[in-house]
Amino acid sequence: MHVALVHLRHRETGGTERYLQQIAAHLAAEGHAVTVVCRSHERPPHPAVRFVVLRDVALGKPWRMWAFARAVERHVRTASYDVVFALGKTWTHDVIRLGGGCEQTYLDVAHQATLRPWERRLATGLLQHRVALAIEARALAPGAYERVITNSEMVKRDVMQRYHVPPDHVTVIYNGVDLSRFDRQRHQAVAAALRAGCGFSVDDFVVLFLGTGYGRKGLARVMDAFPRLRREHPRARLMVVGYDSAQSAFARRAERLGIAASVRFLGGRRDAEVCFAAADLYVLPTYYDPFANSTLEALASGLPVVTTESNGASEVLSHRVNASVLPADADHDALLDEMRFWIEGDRARQAREPARALASEYPEAQTVRASRAVLEEVAARHHASRRS
Image (cartoon, rainbow, N blue to C red; front, side, top):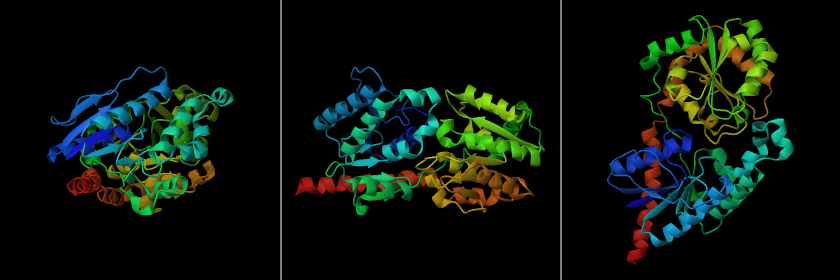
């Protein structure tokens, strides 16, 4: 089959972008013709993958988004794809994957946590979200799709409620993880060097927060719980990894809380596997994540995970076996209780094997094979209708 994979950006970082890399490489390796339709791209994930670049002139992110969606509509109308698979904010497709969940749900439960006070007052980004909502409504309107893929039951329920998508039109395919890359044993030396570079000793208990967008992913909750954790367990340390334009504000928060000496802000990095291997516990008290890839990455690295029910990945976790799952509205006291649970005794170390075992049930190859099966089913239906 000839498959079009549609996404505004093709690059090597980001959850949806990594999925795009994986599915494109897998389909090409299986002998399918693969075209990535995008506005910009990096190197192809497989020599047989080709690109169609649609780069209409547009000023500002909202209009770039809208212009790309319209350009995709025009392109698909004149192309001869067997199946069009949308991974982002466009409305022309046979199959759409909601890797980022529903826009309105994000706005309802998480957006305010991402804004600084002046951004709330000025309502910054309002146009961008309106455009995203308009595109999503067209993408999920009756007749606009044949199948919807979600990466959690949480998002499946949401899209059925918000857009009245029939349940038999939605397939849940959980995210997968690269078990070779996220293997603690492979990175012991460099992970030890990272800990030492942070000023952390082998006896310290390192809590890792890793994610782009500190507000949405709940870093403030972690930091607010940390002073008490430090008083009870003086060897507790916090490592913060990921991009955020407000990093300096969070660093000042650490100063005000009196925990600056125990916190290291490492910024954005491309060696997440080393960061996980350097830690003892992964904490992600997110306000909204359809399925945080970092959950499986931490588990594969042998780390128990503390997260919330607002993370779709919580559906695969076992409370206080390989993880702690908190209510969506949990405060920092509840978070403190779970961090305290894992730091006491030898529980975090004892959870390494069960954590790795759970992650091994979700290899990335399984995710892309399941996605390919959906695409092949739709393409076969199209072939059959043309023959008839």
